[in-house]
Length: 450
Image 1 (cartoon, one colour):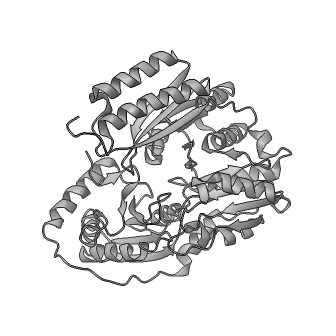
Image 2 (cartoon, rainbow, N blue to C red):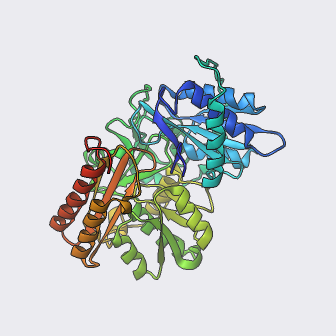
Image 3 (cartoon, rainbow, N blue to C red):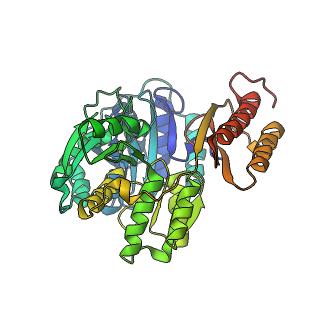
């Protein structure tokens, strides 16, 4: 079982284990030792947190100690580093970002030379060496300056996305950059695509990333759309690997609706391979029903875009994603890309006669709630009798007219309880009962020994 890597890299509070100086340096050395033979080059990208440059410098120092040359692309979305890694012959790509987490957190995401996230088995091997290196890495502050790489690295990614969108100049769009990585390139990209866009939360100061903005708070851009009488709202998370939307009425449109929209378009063009879409255990039953009505099969993968991609490769699907807004278009990208998703949605809106609300009007969403419970440890949930009993009782109550999914977060010390039901009262009651059982057994204030 991995101890450092979660579903999306290594995360923690900046300056604290596992993002203290010694461990970050060891991560760099261990990663360098696991790169393939030959010219070994790693490209580094950052989000806008004040801790990101320092972590990147320490990681670069560790990589260089393993004989690896590093280049910095500066502030760039996570999918931009994935793109550069496999198109510019880098041995690996690393992003310093904690995605949607608060500014005090940070993280390290790694892409292999092919632009895909590392397999779990490789992460386990790297972890083993990290722990070994921690025993020999000297104590004390490690300090090194990281120099930004050439602007062409950023331009290469922008060029890969930029395209003329006929009719886009007739749309009025509000774009929330979450004071994150999208701030660095979204204005240039949208201008090159001919999009008439107003940008909000695009002035990062190191501490305002994701703060009451972006994909964590899509209701903010939704209100702006209504206030400005715009046609569409787009909001990114801190590293811009996901996007959520708002229609002209101010209704939030999540990843499930976007998958339905894109699946129909790909099917219409004869490009939806095997008529299959890959979602996750968190996607709403309503999406599955709407896709089935179009003759499209929906497969479910564990939460995490790397697991969605694994199932896409296995099934041959070219479209997959998460309710949270990670959308993977595998013919164009090796990971979720919020900017690419936004361009596809804009293209459909600009070409059609219906607004976004009309394009997804038939998606009937089952009432769904997600309750987060902070936990002190993560033992298998089915091995905790009181939790297992609560889940079983809830499933009997639903009698197949809904869904329950209980899992640990891969990036935070949380248990997530998701319940879908035909009515909200039942949904909330069942979610509360399961969450209470988890809190009693594993909550920070619960007695040890469960």
